[in-house]
Amino acid sequence: MQHQRAWALTAASLVLLGTIGLTVLTRTSGEKTAPSAASSAAPSVSSSPARVVVPGKPGESAIVTDTDQVRAPDGTPFNKADVTYAQMMIAHHAQALQMADLVPDRAADQGVKNIASRITAAQGPEISVLRTWLSDRGQPGSDPAHDHSTMPGMQPAAALAELTAARGADFDRRFVAMMTAHHRGALTMVNDLFKSGSDERLSKMAKETAIEQDIEIRRMADLGVS
Image 1 (cartoon, one colour):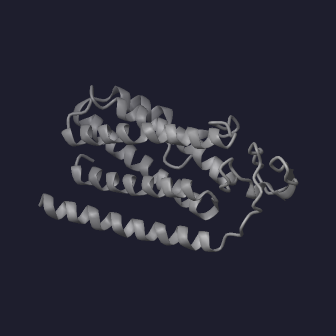
Image 2 (cartoon, rainbow, N blue to C red; image 1 turned 135 degrees about the vertical axis):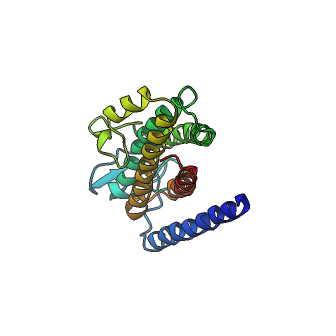
C-alpha cells in the first residue's frame, strides 16, 4: 500500500510539474526582450508601467525604458508582480511556520508532526531566499499598504486562536483543515505569478514551492484525521 501511495504522489508531482512548466514556457515565449543596458542600482518598481530614465554604467549612455522592464544588478528583468509575490509569500510562509510551531506540544498524530517538521524545514529557508531576492533588487521585504489577511489561504486570527487552544485529535483535525486551505492559497499565488511575473529565477522557485505544497496537501488528505 505504501509503495502504491508513493507511486501516486510521484505521478501527481510529475503532472503538476508538466502543467506548471508549460505555463512558464508559454509565458516566457511571449516576453519582449528588455534593453540590454543595466542600472548600477535597481530603480523602484511602480504599480503600473511608466517611462523612466535609467543611468548607464560608466562610459555608457542612459536609456529610457518601462518600469515594468527594470533589471536587477545581475541584468535579469523583474516587475511589480514579481516583487508583490515575493513580499506576500514571505508573510504567507510566516503564518505556516506559526501554525507548524504549535504542533509538537499539541498534536496526537505522528503524521501531523512529520508534516509540520517538513514545513518548518522547507519554508524557513524559502523566506530567507525571498528576502535576499528582494534585497538584491533594492525592494523592501514587505509592503505596509498590503493587507496580508486578504491573501489566498491566510487563516483568520480567530481560527489561529482556536488552533492554539486545541489539543490531541481536535488539534490534528483543525491543523490539517487549516494548513490544507493555506497550501491551496499558495498554489493560487504561484499561478498568479506565472501569469504576470518576469523573473525566471523567481518562477523556478515558485514552481518548486507549488510541487512541494501539492504533495503535502495529498499527504494530509491521506492522514484521515479530518
